[in-house]
Length: 163
Image 1 (cartoon, rainbow, N blue to C red):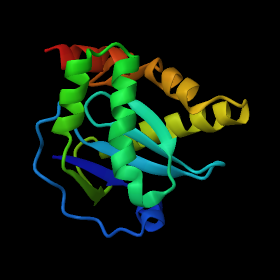
Image 2: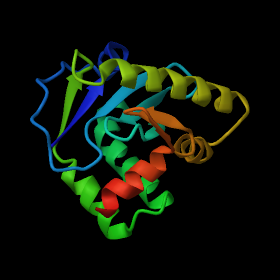
Image 3: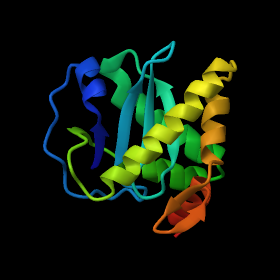
Image 4: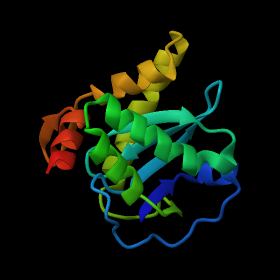
C-alpha cells in the first residue's frame, strides 16, 4: 500500500477527498508527494519519499492518474537500470494506492522543497520543447540531498531496489 500525498491543487483538480494516510507498505521507495503543474498540458509532478526520485506525467484525465502513475513509475525504474523483475515487484508492492493530502508528516518540508525545485526544472525544460521522457531522464540525474548526503536519486533507488 502506498500513499499518494497530493497537494490541495491536485486534489481539487482530481475532485477527490483525501483518505487517511495508510500504514507503511511493502514498496521500497516509500510514499510519493504529488503536485499539479499549470503547464500546457497540465502535469503531475511526483517525488518519492525515501529517495527523492522525481517524475512527471500528464495530469489529465484525472480519474486515471493513479493507474497511469504506477505505469510511469515502472517505465522510469526500467529506464534507470532497475531489473525488470525488481521494477515489477516495486510497482506491484505499491498497490493499492491511497490518495491522501500533504498534511504534516516526516520529511514534508524537505519533500516540498524538492517538488518546487523539480517543478522549476520541468517548466524550464517544457519551455525549451523537451519531451516528458527527456524531462524524466533529466530528473533522475538531478543531485539531491537526503540525510545530508548528496547523490543522484537514481543511485539511491538502484541501491534500495537491489537490496
